[in-house]
Amino acid sequence: MAKSTAILAAAAICLALVSLTLFLISVTVAARVLPIHPDLYLNVQDTPISQLYDTSNYGFLQIDNGLARTPQMGWSTWNFFACNINETVIKETADALISTGLASLGYTYVNIDDCWSRLTRNLKGEMVPDPKTFPSGIKALADYVHSKGLKLGVYSDAGAFTCQVRPGSLFHEKNDAELWASWGVDYLKYDNCFNLGLPPQKRYPPMRDALNATGRTIFYALCEWGIDDPALWAGKIGNSWRTTDDINDTWISMTTIADINNKWASYAGPGGWNDPDMLEVGNGGMNYHEYKGHFSIWALMKAPLIIGCDVRNITAETLEILSNKEVIAVDQDPLGIQGRRVYASGPDGCQQVWAGPLSGNRLAMVLWNRCSKAATITAHWGAVGLEPSISVSVRDLWKHEVVSENTMGSFSARVDAHGCEMGANPTRKTHIGLRDNQARTDDFHHVKVVEDMRDVGQEFAAEDGEWKLHPLFICSIAFPHLDVVLNVVDFFESSFPLRSPLSVSYHVHLIFAQ
Image 1: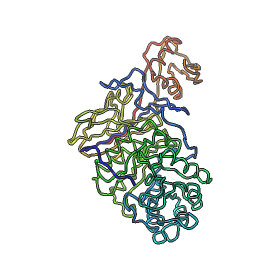
Image 2: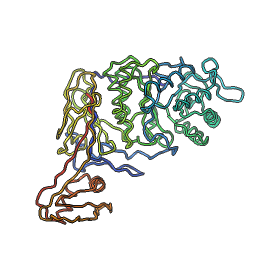
Image 3: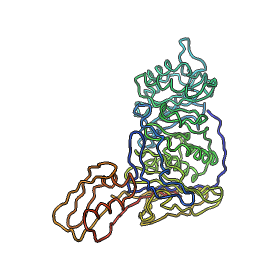
Image 4: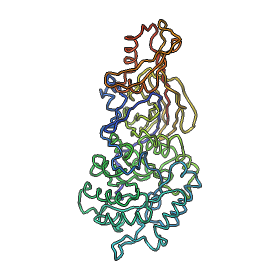
């Protein structure tokens, strides 16, 4: 394990996630084009909104193993047990994931971290499970975990030894990968200790190739600690990559890691994710509200959700946090765009707004109070890439109820020190209606729309004077420029004599945490 570090002190947290019915993105294989109005800027920072949700550094399904279409979810031994592990703990945890309902929510990987192997390889050069703690062997344990509908992960190191001085896999990649595959292993966490000073760009690809050559689909999680900026190169190697040093169970560590991970938001997406390390929720170093914030911000950042507490003895409060379906849905959203910080104010920038698009015409937004006192934080629609005329409904994701409707231009919340509540709205269809009093007819008028950048081939129809646009028309025409009003008005004014103005109705859903 890397040593945990704490860089920035912070004192207050409050999160809010926002979801929109305005479809915010179109996806291409090379890069994802985002729904940004070219003329909008972020307050006094003069930053083009088009840079807010940049994903131009993202490569689609980089290592081509079909995994990690959404961030991985599961449990790991390290944060709570460290080296005090055995096969009984693993089996009981697998049972607990089932009995608590966590497995049904997506927590399916049961990962054994360091200390599972003997201190030396056998005469054949193979890794051997510690006979005292894993007497039945890893294959038998994998069979047990698989019988529960779960998946088993193991740990090794891209060095001569693991961080706890067990055998590493450097120069043993092929044999080790074949051995793990024969045991039925589904996941590999690959650490960075005792690396002989060799560059990680040379040490990590051989294991990728070895895993792929086994014929078994194995999730490949790089744990390079962010030292050599793995987001710049790991997308072609692994399904996830650690961007930071180890987390520890403190507010300072958690907030610092969030800041570091934020830097690399444009590199993450389906197939490969930034990893700010495992969850500390439930381990006792932070309070209930801080843990809610920890879980909320990890979900917004599309981070892997790997539980790090003792699930066998989980408290009701911890289970409430880890089993929040609405928050998990933000993390597992198939669009897969990492949320990021878009605005900061207050002393040392401690009042922050984070945001990121979701699928289904939605946007996630986080209000994060990291000041030492309660504060009112305001998210202006322009700062998160929205038109001021959009109407917003607010649903608290932790209370699971709508708390506000028809908010326009901005949203404000009073955020207590280290407090956290989240929310969202039920989805409603976005629609644009056009009424032409002169061109009223009982017939359907079908018109093929050709946008100046591409022929989108979408049709719309008017009946009894009410123009109804197919949702894909909005997506195809408006999103390349995010200029819905001008594009649609210009088209109709050149085709029909409109008397009444264009009526645009957006229904916006918020996931709000404070």
